[in-house]
Image (cartoon, rainbow, N blue to C red; front, side):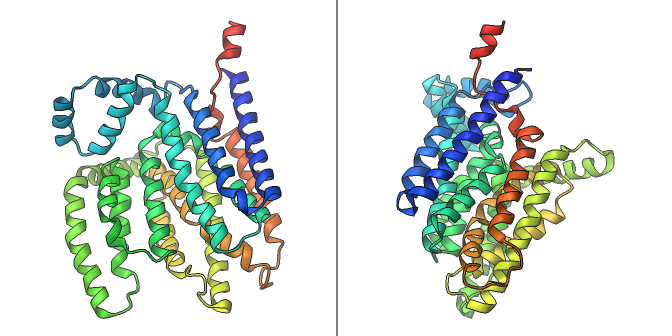
Length: 381
C-alpha cells in the first residue's frame, strides 16, 4: 500500500543523506555545525509530512494529543498530578494547543537529531577527525534508520537523546552529574523506558571509578537516595516489563527479525569498536578522556545481551548505545591513522557495513513504512 510514496520517500531520505555527507567531506569541519543544523531542519520538515500507518504509535498518539490539547490549565494540572509521565503530557498539551498535528513528529525529530548531532559535532572537533571521517560517522548513524522510531514512538527516543547528551557531557567533557540531576528527573517523566535508563545511569555510579573515598561515598549515598525515589515512580513500568519479557519467553511471540538483525549487526560492530578503543588507549593512554565512556558502553552492551529476548527493550537500547558510541567511532577513526593495529581498511569496512545496514533498513526495516507524500495517491485514485 502506498508503494510509490514509500519509494519516493526512501529515495529522498538516501539522496539527502548522501548530499549532507558530501557537503561535510568537501566543505570541512568548519561548516559541520551549520550543515548538521540544516540537515536537522530537513529531517524535521520530512517528519512534519509523515503519514503514519494505522499500526504506528503516532497514529494512536495524535488523537490523545487532541484530547490533552483541549484541556484548560486547571484540568492539565490535575492530569499531570495523576500521571507517571507528566512531562510527556505537558509536551503533547503544548503541541496540541496549536492544532497542527505535524508539529508532533517534526518537533520531536528536531530535538532528537539536535541532540545526536551535538554529540557528533563535538566528537569530530574533540578528536580532530577529518571531514571525510566526519561524513562517514554521520553516514553510519543515519544508516540505522532510526527516524521512524523517533517520529512514530515520539517519547522514548526523545528522552533517550537527552540522556545521551548528559552522558557525553559527564563522561567525555568531565561535567558533574550532580549539575544535571534536575534534567534527569524531568526527562525520566517523559516515558517509563526513559526512567529505566536513568535508573541504569545512576546505578552505574556504584561501579564507576572514583578519584577518592569521599567521592565514592558521595556517589553511593546519592544513588541510595535517588534510585528508590525513581523506583517509586517507575515500579509499575518495571513490573510490566518483567511480565512482558516472561510472556515473550513462554509464548514464543513473533519478533521483528529484520530490526533484530540491524540491532544485532550494530551491537557486534559496537563490541568491535569497544575492543579497538581499549587497544588504542593501551598504546596512547587516555589522552582524550574516552575511558569513562568506554566502560559505560560496555556496561550498556552487557545489559543489552541480558535483556535481548524482549524486542522493544533491545531495539530501543541498541539505538541509545549507537548514539553514545559515536565518540568511540570518532576516536578509533582518528587513532587508526597513526597506530596501524587494525589489519583491515577500517574506513572501507565502516562504509560497506553502513551500506548493508542502510539497504536492510530501506527494504525490510522500519524505514519501509516511511512515507510523507500523498500527492501521487490522490492522482492515481
